Image (tube, rainbow, N blue to C red; front, side):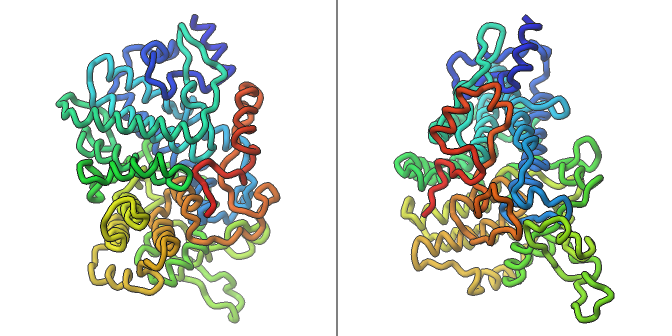
Amino acid sequence: MLSKYNKIALMLPLALGLGACEKGFEEFNTNPNQPLTVSPDALLTGAETATAFRLFDVPANMDGGLLIAQHWAKSQYTTEDRYSFRSTSYQSIWDGFYTGTAALPGGLKDFNELLRIGKESNNPNMQAVALVMRSYYFSVLTDIFGDIPYSDALKLSTTVNVITPKYDKQEDVYKGLLADLKQATTLLKQKSTMAVGGDVMFGGNMTKWEKFSNSLRLRLAMRAIDANEGLAKPEIADVLNGSNLLMTSNADNAQVVFLSAQPNTNPVFENRLTRDDHRVSQSITSVLSRRKDPRLPIYANPAECAAKPDDKSVPDSTGLYRGIKNGLTNPVAQRGPLCSMSKVGDYFTKADAPGVLMTWSEVLFFTAEARARGIVTGDAEAAYNSAIRASMAQYGITDVAAVDAYIAQPLVKYNKTSLETQKASIGTQKWIALYGQGVEAWSELRRLDYPFLSLPASPVGAAGGKLPVRFRYPSNEQSLNQANYTAAVARQGADLIRTRLWWDVKN
């Protein structure tokens, strides 16, 4: 059976554990390639760390969401900044999130295994943690690609082999994730005292896991609001009805704090050991500068030299925050010395920088939007202002008078004229607050359509004159899972970076 398994695994890396359906879970979740005595503590530590690493690594984040959302830009090797994404990047994201890789094990299959262990040991807390993290993983995958293998995904064992999993509609994936998060919260409300070891996110604090579960459900429900109000509104109202725990401080933020010593350092830091391709985008430095935003010196470092030191007619940029345009060709990007452009702030590039999955400020922005839409009662502006304060506090900016003055500025003050102006206020400030969180910033930019971003200087034709709204499926799906891939494309639309996802409804 092991040799049979190896042959199948070579055919399709997806099929290693269990998918989103609970029925028959235990049957599907044995991996003959792994020892059955693996410690659940070690498994959870590795799986949580791998989650943050993949989310902040090059393909999805540094050369993905951060460039599209125009938080960062490329100063060298500008291919991705012009929307010519490599097929290997699509494959890396897909394989890494579903099954892990030889270099970085982990993925959905590990959380499936933890769910199985939790069921067998009657540990509701372990089951809940696994459900929350599995839901998080699947939400990132579907927000990147659209329709994905979900209910059939990862079904491979000694008795059942699904080596060509069907693709579920994104709407159905969302329905499944919302149900799983509800189940996780139900499990956590049992207030079991059974321990969950190896938890590097919350140290086994189940109250914080309950807050994360509900906060993530709010995120997903709000993501669906324009596509299916009938699905989203009851979920949002339920989460915000006052009986559910939500993040209430930055101490509740869902994140993995990397260590200062390898091999457990932040992937951005690791990238900087051998590369120096990224600078801060002019799009965000200009927005922050116009608002005198105190987060600017945290998000960016000042330029270290003049752009043209021998030309006195060109102002010296040394010490200034100088972002660069997105989408420059390599020759144009390299005209000025690299030291004349603002590097990404040290906060984000240090070895022990946190890998953030979700924050308190997000919850407050969602609350403001829910109030603006009339889904729940309350003062939308108050929640919006609190969200900005929470984002500031996340970076140690706690001067009340200074933050109040920032919020009072005409460019920042909440515009309650209409739902659209409120979305513009929320969208712009959320885009600022999500700096560094590439995939989530890209997702909310697609959903809210604010702030308005200009097209990069020289985008390739594949973008069709628009900001990318998804990534293409990896090539091995086209060859090894062709029938299901073809069905997904026929249903969702052409497998192009300009094909909108289900929840991305243009208003």
